[in-house]
Length: 199
Image 1 (cartoon, rainbow, N blue to C red):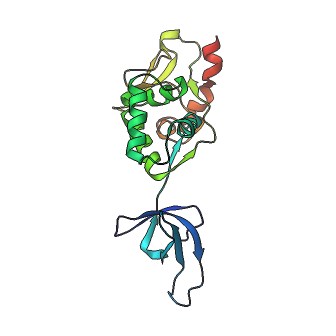
Image 2 (cartoon, one colour):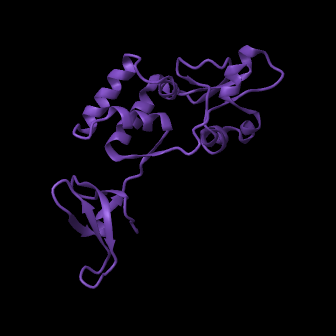
Image 3 (cartoon, helix red, strand yellow):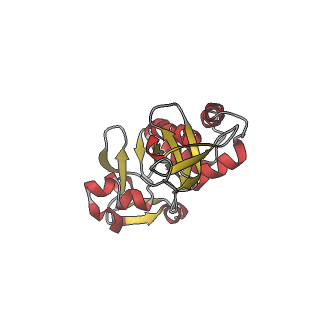
């Protein structure tokens, strides 16, 4: 496995997580590339084979904005998550962020993503525009695709989210995720959520 500068990695045996500062490809001494990691106290180095890459969560830009405004660098990830949870349960988050959280089963699944992102870093989704999947020539109460998160069943109801139903999706969710696996034609019926809400 080849790592690059900036990758988040964890040791395969020890409780050690770090960010790759540089990779030394001179294998004359160790017989394999060496990773130099940023550490709180000092730089340290290890053989590349001792580590595995941590895959980071993909999050919407509204979460990234919250991180920049509301987290504290001197707090642990757990303390920042506690702060996030309090704001979520008190209704103090932005409407975009609340919509994203409530698009999963009462926020539980996405709260786990938030915790992982605060612990291990994250990547902002490039396309976080949301879409409804709206079927033409149907009544308003049964025109929209509703994805029931706990059971992964599809229903056709109104566009209102809640109660474990997701009705807004990113393009990647419609084209490549579980929805596409269920029916690849959904993208043909996708309409930007912003336009639908303005009607």
